[in-house]
Length: 428
Image (tube, rainbow, N blue to C red; front, side, top):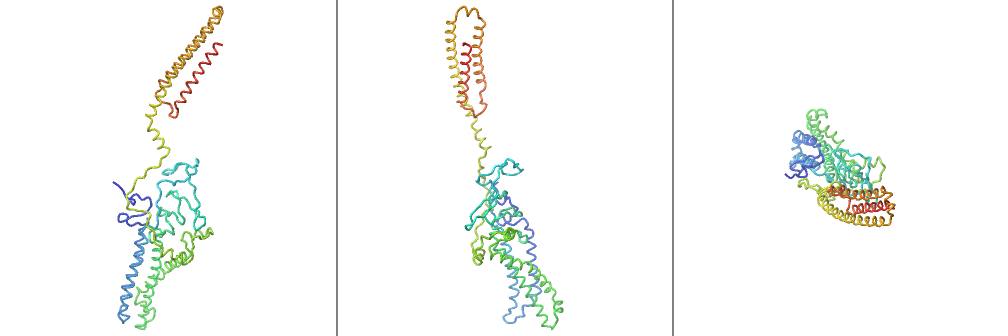
């Protein structure tokens, strides 16, 4: 059965609705964030906004206080969902290393489960041009790619994310190129919601003081939920309000949270700053690029890159054909060698006959041992040639596929030459 991309995803993300929604591995913290926003809003509507419905007599404007609170809360929750349930800008990881010239290091041992060949090391960094300046990008051994500028690998989600800002546990997702706009809108909207609830709760305390001419403490005792909401919003404002101000500064200078801390430590120059207005326009008015991942697509099997092992297998596939060709070549060489040995035998017999005719009968009769040794030597040479041919016939398979027919012919010619030289020395 064919699987989809989200089913075999190597990152730590969690998918819902058949891969239509993608969350981070800590998505369980998202319900906590929902409760921290929705529960105070519900308390505000019940214990504060409900009592202010008729405080503005013209056109019953007091109802607007509750309507604004409900609509604003729903808006914040939608922005939170858009931030946490979308692809933040994940760069698809490669299934094989890039087409680069690697550095081979024999001292690097092979690691278990590592897809790289042992000792094959890619340059850790390389230089690219950005806005007319050289920028150093790093090689990610997990995703097997050179990260684009402003990209970083999130250790929590186990993905390389474009324009990586940070990983936010409150939304359960990485903040990157494709959801940073929504993240800022969520933080800033939450800040405004806190200010609104705090203001309306304080206004309700003031109304209670004016109606019955009570002191602040008496009014606070009459409406404890208002006091709790004011305290809660005051504390939350230090967090979301400070976060909103910090990201306003980052947007104005075209930085990310990750770059801000890294550049501050390394004293680097920000080459992405194009001016305050242009930086805001880039964040809020630029069209978002579509996701580079189709999580619902069917997984397609990739053709493996030819390696040394596959090349050896391809060579081994033609083994039988090569054996047959080598056998035919050897048979031809055997015939040539036999013919050559016959001719050499005829020549040797002629030389022997000529020398025997020239020698004196007395020398031949007086030195029978020499004649016997010469005959035995000639017979031994012929016997070695016969044994060599028999060994070649008994070895039908070549000892090495790299040996060619030219090498065998050279060996036969060498043996023949040695035979002639030995015979010549014997008859000197």
